[in-house]
Amino acid sequence: MTKTPAPKLRSGWTTGACATAAAKAAVQALLGGSFPSRVTITLPKGQTPAFAIAETATGPGWAEAATVKDAGDDPDVTHLAMIRSRVAHAPPGTGIRFHAGAGVGTVTKPGLPIPPGEPAINPVPRDMIKGVLREAAQTHGIPSDFDITISVDNGAEIAKHTWNPRLGIEGGLSILGTTGIVRPFSCSAWIASIHRGVDVALATGVTHVVGATGSTSEATVRTLYDLPEVAYLDMGDFAGGLLKYLRQHPVPRLTIAGGIGKLTKLAQGAMDLHSGRSQVDFARLAEMATGIGADAPRIAAANTALEALEIAGPRLAEAVAREAAEVAADVLRGAPIAIEVIVIDRQGAIQARCGFAP
Image (cartoon, rainbow, N blue to C red; front, side, top):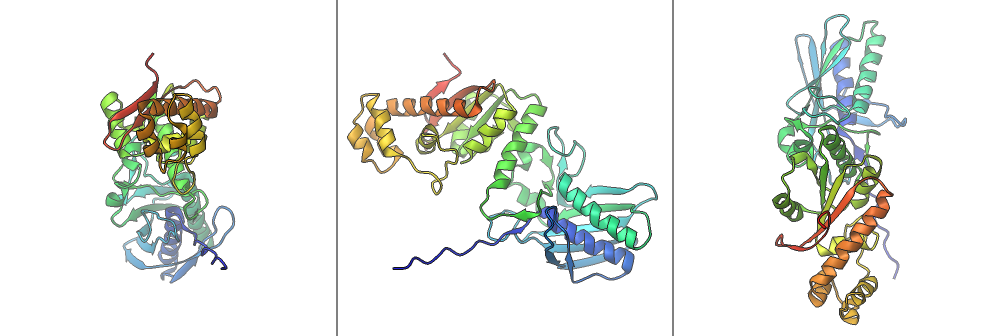
């Protein structure tokens, strides 16, 4: 039987690309008197996508356009969000100034690409927007003095499902994107958020960070340490994304916490712990069990790491924690970071703990 090929996943557009398209339509209306129904922008790598303009508005000295974000087939929380850009004339000599409208956050902590006090509009989207505004000003023979306000409908509520609250971005979403393109299931946004979390932790003087695979593990670690919110990095499945970045940006202490299944995969060298991208090697787990005197053949035949733990008992969790810590240390390649690994069950109880304490 011929296997049907999987359908090709559709790419989408970042909030930064959408805001740029909306800004281009708005400035055209501000300077030319009418809104285009579609605009084409040039992305950083030269692609030229077209965007439909969904809504428009005008007032004294300003024009506003909006476009609906299409994230393609990526499970992006901002998919179908309405991104609005309002362009207004600014006093001569002021240049282009950015403002956070409703649903766009403001940076309050150091360590991010944008300094505290500024609207959370990242550098590449800023450059893209400046480019379309300057091009329009040049076409009309005027200086490029504009106030640009970006807003996102329901952005404050959507932001609760992002890293922004932990990163100190208050009031809404960030306008993001380095290429303008969202690659479906690339996980790049999550990994970038981990990196920004490390940056903020370092900039605020945090010396101990936590990478947890899920909310239950994180909640347990919170009972062990009195750490600031920015110390908790929502690592999820991306152990490699965290460890490789810490290798170049070390924090003195790192706690990794998770369930037996994901930490077994880390102990076996997997850097992506998602069930669809890595699997427990039960033959290797059986070898580990042999070293602690457990029933290796039964463990080799187990269906899950949890079943293997039920067969072998707490000693297996302790062995997994030790080997996971060794793998993490290997990835860190000598970076000055003390490592602790905690294996936690689904109820939040600690099954094993390796590191820090003698």
